Image 1: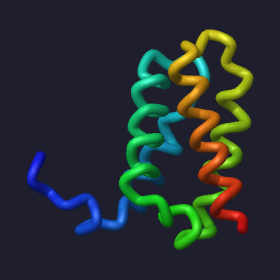
Image 2: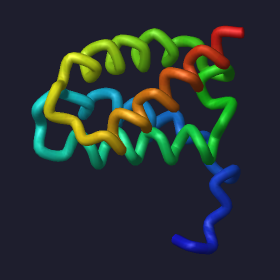
Image 3: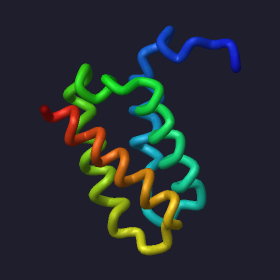
Image 4: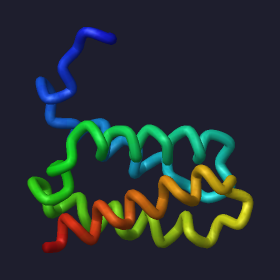
Amino acid sequence: MNRINPQSWSGVRLLEHLLELLDPGAGDTELNIHTLWALLLAHPTLLSNHPHLKLRTTNALDRLTEDHDLSPPARRELSDIAYALRLAHR
């Protein structure tokens, strides 16, 4: 996997899958937040190129900001994802 170029695939299916898994209080929420964060770093235009996913991502972030059990690193990554959403709306 280390030799796979992240630009050789769109990331859309992974984003859709992650959005389904982002539930407050779930045991793997922080891992899914980190994976989403890393995906958007590898594919910075993913949200702007696929507008139908912007609303779904916004809704997922809204649900997660209510989760008071998230660690500070997970909250920072959520903040970065929110910033990516703002950039995608430009």
